[in-house]
Image 1 (cartoon, helix red, strand yellow):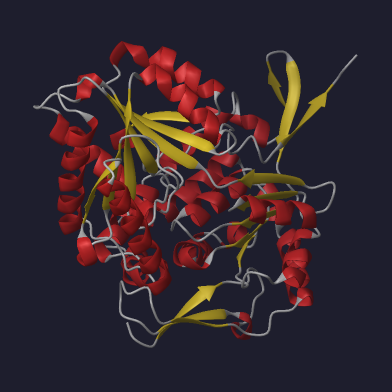
Image 2 (cartoon, rainbow, N blue to C red):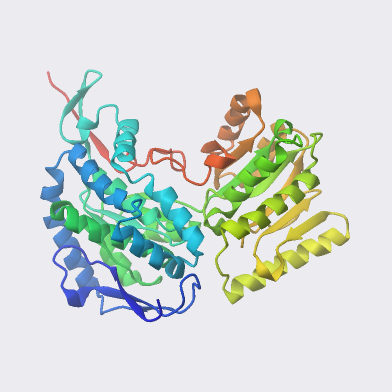
Length: 472
């Protein structure tokens, strides 16, 4: 793949060849190194011109039925899951280097993400969010009220690059609600949105004219301001600082939907710690930790294990370490940068110092693999999820987890679970009050369905405004 040039960012309808941004991949597949952007002159005026073209194409999108739009988007999305399709082949060729993941991880991520881009799943998403999807097409009577769900005149989506595929899910959401969409992906998530935009243009130019995918480096405040100026809805994925910055730059009348940095945890009840089941449980936990190389907000960073089970917490940590070592042979982790490698070594070193005082037990893959399991007798300072690192902490009883969650309020997302049986409903209600928005079994954590309540909110409902007709 050395020296290959990839048409990476599409400036939407009316773009000439000279306006295309190029991505040049100089490194070997899976290296995550040697990527260089060849970016043509991109000015605030060119961004404003692009937005004008998007708005000119809005009528062609608004007049389409939501059923028609989901069918078209589903046909495009299904190409990413078809082994014989050139779009999938190109995605798998480009993802390792651009996203910094292994070939096997690229395939696992694409399989998991593309499963939700099919027509069947998108149709189910709309049905889950709207009692009558016809409200997206016009005035509709629902429970005796005449209402209509109206999408934004312009939706600007600013997506982080930590997990490939999030950009495609984001642009699908706004196109479903008939919003002309400008998507700015993060550097690690450039490939899939661009391939989707290109395939959409081949499938249906009318809908494609309402979509633009464009990249600018972080800190390009003038370009960001030009993009945000005309938006009435902005979605932004990233750190608290990133969300705050975009919120401050957006027009006062724009609705900003922020998907902040989130933390996910896991809890394992005594029922799952029997000798005949603990290995399978550890394998599910390992995959939930290892998927996305721990870069996803759904990846559990700390696993709480109930005491007094057939396997004690430190014993589970050892079984989990074995499962992560085995996972590394099937789903290798991607390369770490020198800076990331230094942080990982420092984290391991600090944990080993704690081990010398009897406060921790450390298992890791050495220099050959980035996975680490730190079994703590109590909560140690610092909690890094870098390089498939996970902490195992003892819990007297699962009812005590709510107190632990209190320290993370405002940033909680998922609690993964195993072995809670009939206790689950009561426990989940307590966790919900502490800020958790999703409770899921470990094997189902990595790829939530498209209709999941993302950070506790319906992803399509967040984008629309409702209009009501009153009659005498």
